[in-house]
Each structure stands twice: as C-alpha cells, then as structure tokens.
Image (cartoon, rainbow, N blue to C red; front, side, top):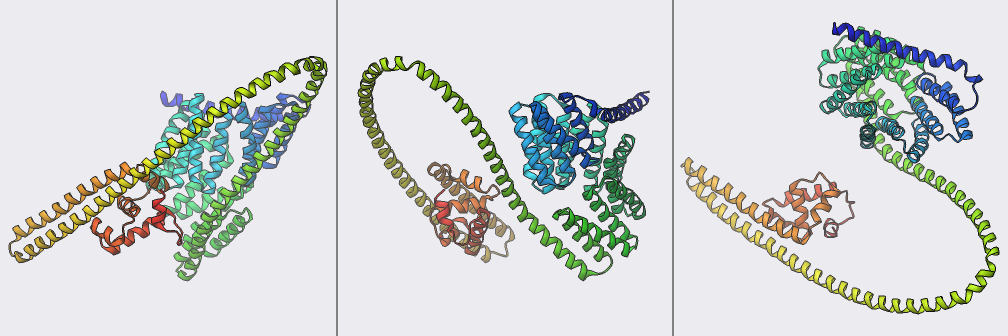
Length: 595
C-alpha cells in the first residue's frame, strides 16, 4: 500500500513539473503582447532560467532584454536576477571568467538588498566555478555559506544544495566517506521536500562515492536510480550525465560493449545540447571503452577529437585528462614509449595548472579591484551631484541670512578668542600628559628589555644545563653499554640494563625539555603560535628545533641537547626552511629571532 502511494506521489511530482514547463512555454508565446512592467521582467527571467542549460543563445537574448527593462523600471530584484542567470548561462557555455563577472555584479545588488536567498545562490554558483577550476578551498567556503544562509532563512532546499555541493566536491578530492556524509544529509532534505530532480542528482553522486570505494554493484544501483528519475523528467543534460557515469563504471567492471553503447547515447545527447565539455568527457570515456574492445583506430580517433574540443574550449584540465587516457590506451596496447611520452605531457600540464591557478587568483583579485574602483567612481559622481545641489541651497540660505551673519560676527569673534585661549591651555596640559606618557613608555620598554634579557639568560642556562645533563646521560649510557657488553652472556641482566638505559634517557630528556619549554613560553609567549600560523603542519621535532635555533645555538649544541646526530639536525633544519617557505638567501635563525 505504502509503495503504491509513493509511486503515485512521484508520478504526480513529475506531471506537475512537466505541466509547469509546458505552462511556461505557452506563456512565452504571449510575451510580445505584455506591457513593459515587472510581470514581463519576471517572465523573461523565468524563460532565461529555463533555457540557460538548454539553449544558451535564446537564454541570453531573454535575460538581456529583462536587464534592459529592469533598469528602465529601476526594478532592482529584476536587475540582480537577470545578471545572475546570465552568469549561469555563461557557466553552462564553459565561459567561466565571463560567468564570474556577471555573478559578481548580481552579488553586489543581492547584498545591498539583503536578499539571503539570492546571496545563497550566488555562493552556490561561484563555488561551482571554483570547484571546476580546482580552487577547492574557495569552493568549500562558498558551499558552507550556502548552508549557513539556508539555515538562517529556514530553507531546506538551499541547505540540501549546500550539502550536495560539499559532497560532490569531496568526491573530486577522493574522500568518499566525507562525501557520503554530506550526500546523505542532502538526500534526506531532498526526500523531505519531494524534489525529484534533486534526488536524481544526489543518487548519481552517491554512486560516484561508492565507485571510488570500488563498491561497483552499489554504485551501479544508485546511478540507475538517478537515470530513471531523469528519464521520467525528460532532463536531457541529466540523462547524458547519468549515462557518462554508468559508462565509466561499466568500463571499470570490464563490461566494455555495454559501456560503449551507453556512452554513444550520452555523446548524441551532449551534441544536441551543444555542450562541448560534456562531449569531450564522453568521447574520452568512449575512446577508452573502444580501445579495450580492440577498436584501436576508432578509439584514437575519438581521443584526438576530444583533444581538439578541449583545446577549443580552452580547458587545460580536460587536455590533461586526454593525455592521461592516451597514455593508458598506449600502455594497454603495449606501446610503452608512446605511453611514457603522453604521461610526461600529462604530468607537465598538471604542474602548469597549479601555477595557472595562482595566476588566476591574482587576475580575479584585479578584476574585483577594478569593479570596486568603478563602483567608487559612480558613488563619487552621485556624491558630487548631491554636493552641488546642497551648495545651491546653501547659497540661497546664505544670501537670506547675510544680515544676521554680519551682526553675529563680533559675537563669534569674541567667543572664538575665548575658545582659543581655552584651547591653548588644553594643548599645554596635553603636552605635559604626553611627555609623562612617553617617559612611562620608555621605562616600560627598558623593563621589558631587562626581563627579556633575564629570560634569555635563563633559557641559555637551561639549554646548557640540558647539554650537561645529556652529556652525563651519554657517559652513563656508555658505561651501561660497556657493562652490557661485558655481561652479554647474561641475557636477563643485559635486557634489564637496556631497559634502564631507555627509561633514563627518555625520562630525563622529557623532563628537561618540559621545563625548558615552560621557561621559553613565559619569555616568548607568542613564538609557537606565530610559527604554527605560518606553517600549520610542523612536527613536534621541527617546532623544538625552531625554539633551539631562536636561542642561536649551533648544530653541535643542538645535537647534544636533542639526542640526534649532526646530520639529523641539518636534515630537520632543511625541512623547517622548506615548510616555512624561505628563499635560499634568507637566514633561518634571523627569521626565527624576529618572530
């Protein structure tokens, strides 16, 4: 009974979605007869949203018309939404820089209006671009902001989008367990609001998470669930994406013929949608399947076409993927030299992408700076107009009040003279106070300098004490080792002596370091905090090394204190320099002493 009700409910949702789309397309025919008001703007935006992933040219035409009309009507929400969906349209066209420009302009208006929903969708859109470009840290921040705004506005759909996006991102980062955690939260929210389209996307991504864990049967089940819903909804882009996922999985499962058939279907759908990125990805997977089927010539033809498309849309990440697939195909065919050459190209391009990401961040900052400058200029012009208007009013008032001002001049002059006298007295008092404050500061600085010197002497004394203690320990250890060697026939005594050596060395060394660290923290309280803020992945050994170097101890002294060889100390110093990002001409000890 429950299953029947659930099937009926899902069918009803699908019918409603289909009817909504049909109703929107019917209203499209009446567009030219509508008056130029906000209702027409909203319809133009709805049509732009509908076509942004289906027909980019048509979407941009409607959205540009809505932007012009919104500007004439001073309809700010219409302006913001027109800009936002133009950004989304360029996103689907793979023109990410242009998409970012429109989204940034929309974000400024959403922010001024206090539109939390608009801001949430802005962060989702920019997070998607960051994710594609490999800026995972920025993407995570954007998606977490989507969740925060969704919780703030009590919108489960926004929360679901945020959780789904985080899950999808962690799939890209090959962290399926964390991805599954977020995707399960998104799935629960999608079921709660009955969003079938959203459910299909979440199912597909859960399939991806299972695939990463090599749980292929579970992965296939979820991919097929997503494909069924998308087929019922008639979402061509979604169907094509599901077919890519299933095709890729079938290749892993060794079912190459089935993979080839479903990938050909996906390729046709992406070609109909004019989605070059989707076509490229599908052709790569199809080439891989064909190569396993022994269709070498056709496989390499598909890969070459994929390379041409990747270069056309200027997507270096896809170009790198093509090289990787070609390397895999050549290796499978026993052409190891060619495979090696393709792998070198793939590795080189991956390294270049890392550098390009840094350059892109700089460009984005420059674009934001230029945008802020333009906004400042507009604001300045508005301010100048307001000042001019106020000056005219002030001139009129000044003429009317001229007689009163002349009468008041003498009174004001006397008041001013009295005020200046009071001001002189205040300045004299302030000078006295300032002089006293400067004297106090000098005394405080002198006291702090003396305390620091005393503390450094205590630290140096402690370091020397540790050095002497460690030398004593080494002598004891040598004597115990000698005793162990002399009594090597007595295994019980030998084991006991070695236990004493280990315990003595560990206990004394730890106690001495704990006391040294306590004194060091009292004197240089912020040193460790600053050090970790510069590089958060330092090991305890490297932190200890930094503290000893700050005291300007040499390698031999540190070696004796830390119970390490001089070679080990030099190795730790090298790792520390590398993690702190110091150039070859920068002095490590000088750098640490300035912290």
